[in-house]
Length: 345
Image (cartoon, rainbow, N blue to C red; front, side, top):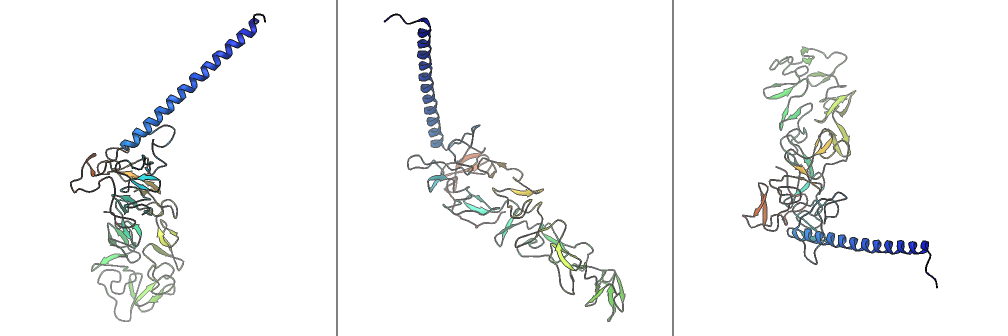
């Protein structure tokens, strides 16, 4: 046959070049993949997690710090739960033991489920004892309406003053009518700060007091029908105060600061967050890490110095550095607690 024409020769040359480029591209891709696999294995062996721009940290699955085992072994500090390795000292779903889960707003700290800083566990609920009128200073220590809880102590509410250490309304208290220790004579009632023989038509006689059952929180709708410390009396019925909302089985709650109902009912804060201005935020001095937890880099064995550094077995975090545990404990590895065990301090 004759010599190929010039167009056919050019076309053949172009095909040979394209084939060579394809081979080179496949080889480069294989090299990149091998490098990524090697880097991933190295990270798992050291327990490190380096962030990438396209997804979660290398070696993690989701935001809980889980990594797959290397063969049959977990990286230092983690324990195998199911098919993945976790820090039992700080994983909410496996706190102190596999499948011992913390319920928000509790989070896992050193292997125990604990309330956020500044909150205590009362009847299974995280409570701020310094301001909750139903648990003022201690669990189940309720203030009497309309008292408020300030700094862990019940304080006199609107319209009340303290007489002999007791909050009272001098507008209706026959023992302190108009002023402390100004008692009405027997057979008289106290109405609007003065002693009278009969209650005015617009007030109701309850004991020795003349009260407005349409607005009196101690006699709401009828005598001795008291509203709770988080309610006020409106039109003869107890209702949440302006700052409160009734959420499920809970009494009126303040959605701007309640860790169990933050911004909306049944929206608890998690990962150690607190509720500030209706948003779940990390407490001062802590940082939100990729595992969705607020970490104190000075003391958190799972986030020691930064989000990515976890102390190994037999180590604890002190001043942002992993050091040998002086008590010989597991440090960053496991805790001995479990769900629902501890109150915050």
